Amino acid sequence: MNRRKFLKATGLTALSLALPGCFSKNRKYADNDKRPNILFIMSDDHAAKGISAYDSFLSDVAKTPNIDRIAKEGMLFENCFCTNSICVPSRATILTGKYGHKNGCSGLSDEFDGSQQTFPKLLQKVGYYTSVIGKWHLSTEPTGFDYYNVLPGQGTYFNPTFKEKGYPWGTGDGRLIKKGYVTDIITDIALDCLKNRPNEKPFCMLLHHKAAHDLWEYDEKHAHLYEDIDLPEPPNLFDDYKMRTALADNPVFKLTEGLNNELAEVHKTGKNDRRTVYQLFVKSFLRCVASLDENVARVLDYIDKEGLAANTIVIYTSDQGAFLGEHGLWDKRYMYEESIRMPFLVRYPREVKPASVNDNIILNLDLAETFLDFAGVTIPNDMQGESIRPLLRGSSPENWRTSMYYHYTDGGIPNHYGIRTDRYKLIFFYGLEWDLGTGEVRKVSKPEWELFDLKKDPNEMNNLYNDTAYANIVKDLKTQLRQLKEKLEDSDENYPGLKEITQKYW
Ligand code: CA
Image 1 (tube, rainbow, N blue to C red):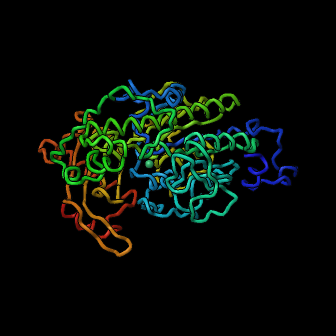
Image 2: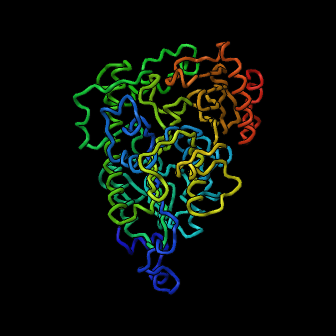
Image 3: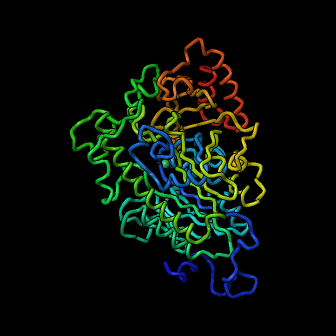
């Protein structure tokens, strides 16, 4: 994009550039402004185990050297979780610092109310140049951004269309078709935006990729990767679903019941066993990841070459995790580790020690407050997270959260809520679904609790809920869960029929 068109799209005119007191092209903001730039890279469904900086069954064969560089030069978070493992709700939570029941986005089809408070709006107000490039996924027009250029809905992997600021948002599929592979194109647009930004201001860029979401259409140049090898398998690929009704009874996201029909490469084999489907789909996923990794390098190189590294917070994360065959699953949604764990890597040389690791529980809920903290903005009382800045500086505050609350309500699998502490996870699959159109409440599965001891059973294969040795732990976790629900104001009263079920089975 040329500079003139860019300025038009961003509302900056030749007049404003010429006026004294407005932006002066010769003065860099960093001379008298210590607020950092923020480069917030987020991919889609990029499971932490698909990044070699995280130790996993894949890390020896699937290397991501460029994403790993952020960990080497910054901090890796081992326990970053999302509060609802699905795309739209996680993105809405990141923007607002609030759970879905507060920001209006608990499900995939919920429309984001763009008039509400978000961190980009608050940053824009104090002089940040704000932009969002790539995957947006919230159906309403982005607000609080000086510039946006986003994919409509899920977007496409090849020759994607975009919706750009300065043109009518409309409801269609976007007007600008760009030839090529989506991860390259999103990076091209982001680099253009960085080059053309008003450099008198600190910037906050949301660089959000479509990859590595299903159905994992990879660039032709990565087709040869992993061609001649069998990938190592996750240790819980062959979960037999004993003592876990929610998984036993629900075929939707199992490798052998769903994906074999959707992924042409699997269909072609005529085979329908977990091992075959796993190999084919994870190879496709990792080829999409290879492109992400190469494009992260392009952006890091630009930041470094322009002398922006010291004063720019670079984050790499994903809107949630994803199953890579664990429990015989793909997709996410469930409160199991692979689904709720987000990769989270941060480089910021001014405050973050290279090659540092943090194991505190942090959440997608914390991002808004963290960004505001770095920008010196007073954090609004109604945000529900915590700034992770103290953790980034290397301290581990004594009063840091020791548990997190999760609630999935979008159906497809049994809805559930639960608590995860440093050691345990307690999940209540309450089995209700709501049709908001008709007001209908449907019971779709038998209500059931699951308890896992993550220290003894990190792969969550052994449901201990009915083990009498854990009775006191269950009791204590239920008390904590109730307290969290109250504190976060996610009352069962808000969900028709849930209060009665909870009371009966608590
Ligand atoms: Ca996602």
